Image 1 (cartoon, rainbow, N blue to C red):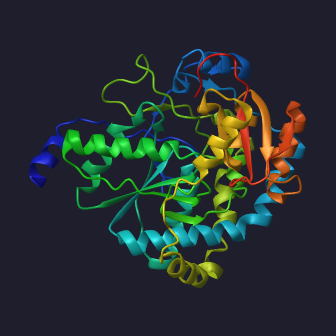
Image 2: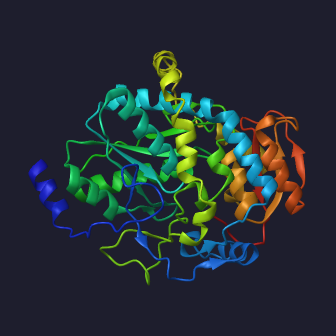
Length: 383
């Protein structure tokens, strides 16, 4: 069975990846095709209209938001204030992964929010266990699935006995968690290879992951920026005229933003706290292993409540959690922002972006999440 499966996988000729992004190769290898030469960016309004008219979001890119000096200062302040907290949650996630999966492991982060988290987990494991874990970043796209060629390449390089651990930054509604499960099921049907669809995240406010650092909905500073905190890599692209049968999904490498790049500074700042949180992580990992990792999908109750309260026809227009709300403000056309309370210290950047874009903010008591972004309906569909 294994021999047949491996032979089937090796039949697919997949070229080795080209260098991509601003991270060191020792931190991550991007399994992405560089399509930097293609003009894919559309303005926020034009892109929103296209998405809600049925064009898939992966066929174009948003114009990269260029933050104000005040906003950049807020990012650095937030990173300084939260670095130890993120280090602790990274350590908890890493300890859970090692406990459950062992050290014969490959980390596979989901580009692009998962990439810095995967780097942090890799660095923690190397520091604590003196083992260098391979780490790749791959594309996964709602409605189209995970990059099959990327997974096949990883299996060709590391064999069927090596465990694959998927990594992302946080959960919102849990849509990507569902896409991951569907993609893993497809790999089993097609190639006979069984992949664990467990998704490790720093924060799981949607309660749809069993491997997480916390279920608090708090600000992970990498959500504040786009490519300049993600290795200068764009969102991933999948379009038939750009991506061939043997290609990885595509992305752009924004070399022109290198002077503003804080990707390595971000992970370095957090990683320096690892030595002091190691013991805490072991304790918290033990505590969290006893019944508290149940997947309840509780966040969906919020979404359904909001959908009914505001008469929103398309649930895809509701983006819960700090990370997703930030994305709404950075690259969509927001209608309004809902918050659990106005004095939540994790929402400073949300308030700043909402003011800049003249987006109303309303208190919505009883939210599971700290906030929720609602996209303006233009009368069509939606991402």
